Amino acid sequence: MKKIGVLTSGGDAPGMNAAVRAVARAGLSKGMEVIGIERGYVGLLNREFIELNAITVSGIIQRGGTFLYTARCPEFRDMEGVRKGKAVCEEIGLEGLVVIGGDGSFRGAGDLSSLGIPCIGIPGTIDNDIQCTEYTIGYDTAMNTAVEMIEKLRDTSQSHDRCSVVEVMGRRAGFIAVNVALAVGAEAALTLERPYDLKEIAERMKRTTSQKNGKHHFIIVVAEGVGHSEEIAREIEKLTGVESRATVLGHVQRGGAPSVRDRIVATEMGYRAVELLEKGIGNRIIGVKHGEIYDIDIQEGLAMKKPFPDHRYDILEATAY
Image 1 (cartoon, rainbow, N blue to C red):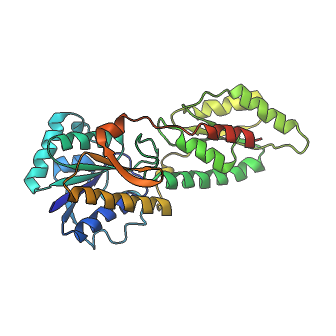
Image 2 (cartoon, helix red, strand yellow; image 1 turned 90 degrees about the vertical axis):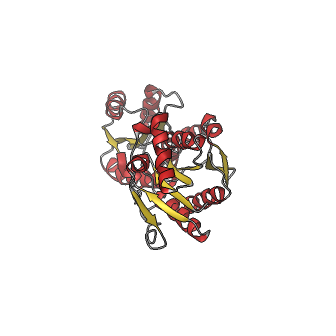
Image 3 (cartoon, rainbow, N blue to C red; image 1 turned 45 degrees about the vertical axis):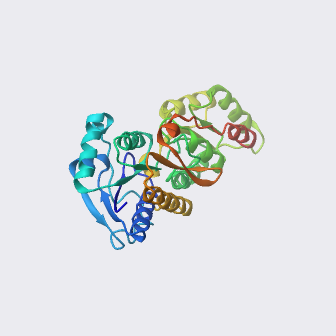
């Protein structure tokens, strides 16, 4: 291939810039022309292009967000929109495309691949909810940000003998919640993947506070998919008598400089994507399997079911009180 493109789609994630940089640098080293497509599939349809070279991608590896911008594109959900995308690719001589995003972005990449434009998907989402990979770009940074914010909340919780109910991101997946709860020594993690009983949690809290020199401040981490953090805080206060406040961390978890792990994984994935396109291979998702970078057919990857670390709930319950 002589000319490839790269775009970021869906929600932004720390490390996306590192992946874009890797795609650009790897492509340039192989004699390719590399085009950056701004605002995802929307930018493809609207012909929002910039040339990527050693200068334009210099100094972006440490930046959060995505310097290519990102957007969601309803038009690309049906084949008419995908055919328009194919026509634009042919118009500018784009022979392959790297799509950095989540499962919705990959479905578009799969459809575009089926029309003859080879596409490679790189998983960029803080939720870590892509089925075919153990790890997604942005996940580590988001968890570190959540831990940092919760540690600040712990100071005021401890000062006021308070329970902090903290809602973290993750959409319909509880990976961030259970791992962050373990990392901060929380009393509980509430997720969609495992049933929870607020009365049981409250009883454990009351037993702790009744002990001599017992603990009087608590952290409960709630996954975004569960929601209702304000209601949960009110119920906890009603059941325990411990003043409880809810905090929704929100989009602060998406921002910030990517961690070392996110920068390295993003760079490895970007390089592998260019290697595949150089061979004319498309319709693949780059992922991590047993700690190693690998690739898999898009449709096969999206059909997989990702295991959830249930054992970490058991560890959390055993070490929380």
